[in-house]
Amino acid sequence: MITADPLGRDRVPVGPSLSMFDPMFAGIDEFGEPVYLDIVYHNLLAGGESGGGKSGLLNNVACTATLATNTRMALFDGKLVELGAYRDLADAFVGPDIDHGLSVLRRLLTVANNRYTWLLGQRRRKVLPTDDLSVILTIIDELAVYCTLLGTKAQQEEFATLLRGLVFLGRACAMPVVAATQRPSWDIIPASLRDQFGYRAAYRCTSRNSSDIVLGQDWADRGYNAVDIPPTNPGAALLLAEGGLPRLIKTAYLTDEQIYNIVDYAEWIRRPTALTEPIGIRGDWDKAA
Image (cartoon, rainbow, N blue to C red; front, side, top):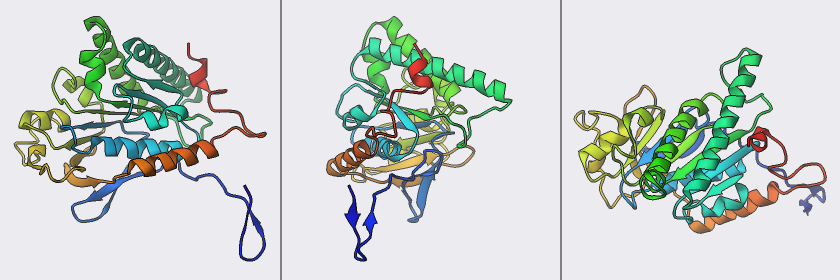
């Protein structure tokens, strides 16, 4: 659509200039300073009780990804409604179906291994913003659904193993993982998985042990305990970044109306035109069987 400005000239709306390689605004800290996260090179884990604000963080990431150029998504949502707004923008949307989830994880791992083969040929160790490769973002809402509830024990264990591999491999090949759970426990977030997440956000937890499962061992004893977050302060979390100390933040919040407005705009700017191909036509993701 072409619109006219006050001087009578025609103006053509342009697409967004967001990039997943740029720091993403996540909220503010206790001093009112903005908090930014470098999602591409740091996996993100969020944990805490229901209603604590985890979905707000996931929606911030998903909305940024939908408006970022050259970015694709694989979404896992056992409840369907937390990430359902983005289902038409995602290359894969997995609901409460463990077989579908395993298939998507296998494809993602194939893509990750192919990218490392390409990097080896380029004599490099990580994907750069200047490379002609899309960022493939995986978001999983409620790990417990796929690791303890759906399918057989063998399928649950395979899901956890594949996820651990993707979290391990994705960091340097522009395939970050963002995951959340309202049941921080060792069977869902073992230390071998947790330690692969460069960013960890502990929302209000019901026990010191749950807080430590998200942030890391002994942080509660050092005074960083998500149990101390008041239940009347949803969106507050202790954020641990690589090599630092946990700090109290307040996650930015998007209403359902705002989310769907962003999604509607993202669908419009991503629509196929005479000069572009639809999302999903080209790319290493599509070549993975």
